[in-house]
Length: 274
Ligand SMILES: [Zn+2]
Image (cartoon, rainbow, N blue to C red; front, side):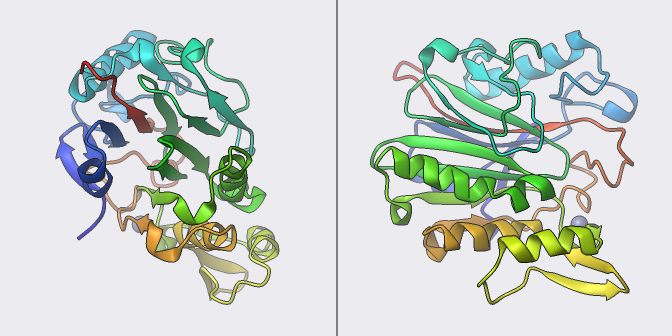
């Protein structure tokens, strides 16, 4: 069974982690159940894709209510496909939750140890990577398109946890809905960077489909990077859900030719009184 299960029409969740940690909200939104129109029909969560700000705010309220996590407890980012990671504390609550201006600039990964904060990042094909260290309650999430992947954001997240004294072998990781290899054809330029990042890794997460054209499995690529960084293979869950194949559930930047909405990944500890 896939680790990501549709919980409500608005989102998938991760039952394996929620079973172990019932006060954890973790999942990935769909494109359904919101107010946005046209190409953004209908649960667009991105402020930066020419939607009406009111629609995005209303869509976020819909998700906030479903999760029991108010938007003034969310944090969000201006994502730039780099490998900058921020550690979030309670004074950051609400930044990027209700507007784009207060979001963290140039940030593609979040970590927190605190309750009552929902870490969110936006996607339309890129890979969401979730992190959980049950012992310390440290959580994190990262955004890895091909640039973030070959830049090593997955490894950098693990290094950040290590900085806080957390051993990689104790970290649970989940890789969420994102583009599959059949839908993601890239050229030599990208594959060379993938090869550099995966130096010493035996299995290659791509195959040549025509001259200078390769089907790249970004989920597997990140999985191998995580294993190289010390995460145990058995601690990594990987969904089969593809944002491009699953037109009924997701926006896809590639499929929709650049003009589309955004889903969010989310992870946060609910406060005791929820
Ligand atoms: Zn696909």
